[in-house]
Image 1: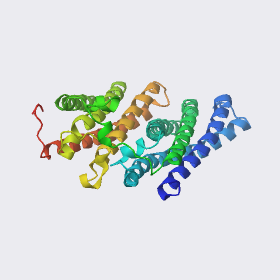
Image 2: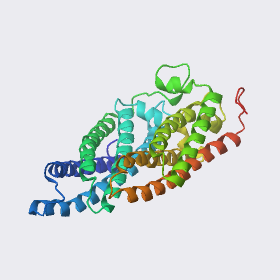
Image 3: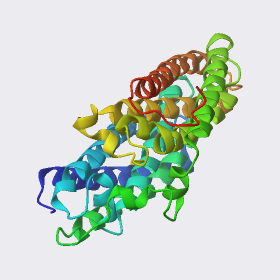
Length: 335
């Protein structure tokens, strides 16, 4: 299994990113110990010159991690045909102990990496680099996370055995089962759909307020986090049913299949990206009182809000299309 091109690419990216981030983490220690923007020492000048190189390398690392997340899910979907009992990526992730761990770690690296990129962008525009210590302290936290992701991914692919019979998505995402996935699948469709649209309305309203007046960034970020969780739960408990036109098929991964028009990518990519931008707004808002950052954060914050709102609107538009365009009618849905 390890000789598959996609698997080799994923492991190659993971190892390369881990090595680069660990090297950057060593530099981050030097920055936290010795950075002094008011000093004209040789050490300070060396740190200032190297920070541009390190920032560029780390930016490419996190860009690679974003692609890696998409490729990992796509590859798991493609490998489903090689495992008995697997109908989609769920079966492949269930086929080895490290599957779900790897996916969750990749998602964690995605959001933490997005936060670092936003911090780095804001910091590089200020004349006194006020966020240098903050962003490199964050990098020290992300580097071990990326290393853990690379290790989990390696163990996952190494332990995959095509002769093992795995469980399909119907056994995991079923209201009659046990665990978090079963509990989410058991949510009332009308209730979850109403919660998604209510949270979306509040999110768009607060986001629009922030976009116009530059206030409420922390609330916008908090609502985005809540709306993200509600949206994922609604996809499993309700949206998937309308896409499949089947009242008992709750799998969030079968949405990625060509037979359903790859609608899953139109749901997950905007949702994850919009949430990352919104959370970034809440993060940089902590330094809005910094004199050298106030204008930068105001301009970039509104720009990020515009992008996040557009992506959230796209997500809600796709979900609405999935529901209204379906031939399935479920009793109890509020309209």
